Length: 362
Picture 1: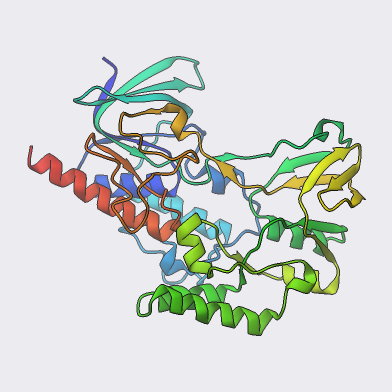
Picture 2 (picture 1 turned 30 degrees about the vertical axis):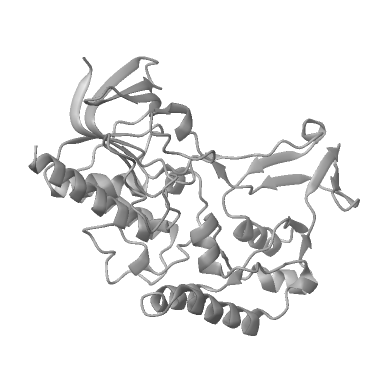
C-alpha cells in the first residue's frame, strides 16, 4: 500500500516549507518529499556567501513567522538561512530527504506518488488525497547546447546570479565579459522596494512608468554600453513572462568604467578557446560561466488528464487567476506563479485553507 497521508508536498524549498508550516498550523497531516539532502538546497548549497536578498524582508518572509525586527532590511544569505532554520524548527518540519519523485498519478480517489530513494535505491510509494507541487521555478540548472563546447579546453560551469558573479570577478581583477542577448530592465533595490509599495495604491502601468523613469534618471542611457531596455515595464514583464529586472549592486559602475565588457550578441559556436559570436566577432576565454536560467522537470513526472502545465513546466493558469489551484483532482501549485517569496507565501496560505475547507466538508 505504501505510506498514506492527507497531503504530499513535493519540494523542500521556501515554497514547500511555507505550505508545510500552514498545514501544521491547521493540524493537517502531510509528507514533504525533497530530492536533495537538505531543505532550501538552492540557498544552502548553490549560492555563494556574498548573496543577499534583493527584496526587503517584509516581501521575503514566509507565512506565520515574520523575519525578526532586528534583522537588516536586506538579508544576507547567512541571515536568511538562519531564519529558515528557525522556521523549520518552529513548525516541526521534517522532510524526507533524498527522495526523487518519478511519477505522480490520480486514480480518481487519491494521488499515488512513486519516489526513488536516492540513498538506498529503493522505489517507494506514497498516497494522499491532495498533492502540492512546490518544486519552484528554479528547479534544474539549464546549460544550452553550444556547437563546439566539448572542444573548450578551459572550465565551464553554471551559476544562478550572473550580475553578482561578474561584479565579484571584476573586483578580484579578472578580465570579465557578459553576454547579454535580450533586453532587460536595470533597477536598484530602492527602486524595487518603492515599486512594490506603490503597487498597493497605483495601477501597474503607472508604477512601471515611475520605476522606469527613476532608472533612466539614475543610470542614464545604457544602449551605449550594449544594454537595451524592453518596451514593457519591469513589473508588467515580470507578470507576463517571469523575467525579473536586474537589481544593480555595483556591476553597472564596472560596465561604465570598462572593467566589465558587455557582448550584445549570443554565442554561435566554440572552437577551442575561441568563442565565436553571432555578430561574427571572436574572443578568447579561459572560463565560461553559464547563467542561462533553469528548466523544470515537473511535466516529466506529473501525470494528469487535465493538461495543467505548459511546455516550460509552469501552470497554464496564470496570476491573478486561481493559479495555485490545479484542477478538481486535488493538485496544487505553490511558488510557480513567478511572484517570488511573497507570492509563494500567499499561494501556501490559499492552498492550506482550501484543503482545510475541503476536509471540513467531507
